Image (tube, rainbow, N blue to C red; front, side):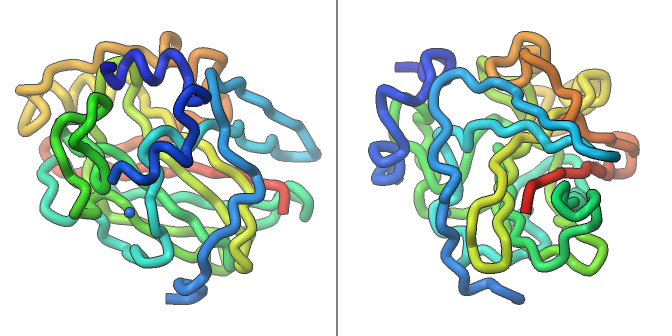
Length: 244
């Protein structure tokens, strides 16, 4: 089965329990408890307005979540992957505290490389190239007093059936799951990136945000702001609102 077909048919047929065996600072030893449960099937963007902010849409963790996130406490998650440098700045706000910054939250991110491959997985129909023994483009940080985490990475590539994206999982300091979501990219910026460098051989993304099985119901709370140029580097800024 192609990864594209798997994604479009949903994850319920396999379940995350079947996927995991394929094979990955402050609070770094916490092993998260995913009390939110696995999201299966085609996701729906559920948003709740409150005061001055809106809870970020909940999405699926996908078929390639980090296996042991507590072991990957890293600022620079690039490893040996090539691509345009991307500084990722994510701010976590707490809707239950008048949208104030949430300090001490654990934030895990992961995304594919310039060719559309994920680390920690592979050797199957979903991803033929085997990267089970490496951990590139995955990392965890703890939010500071301003609710901010910063990662150094590369601009994500894409794979068939999905628009460019970054996965985000937010936990409280005790490891309780608060939100699983995804970050979408401005399509014009992605088009510029994919037309050059190591991305060029892979070509342009075949799926727009509006046609993506995750983002098709809207990216109001998930679209990042991305600044920079292909000649220099890029910076992504994004706010994720949780209920903590």
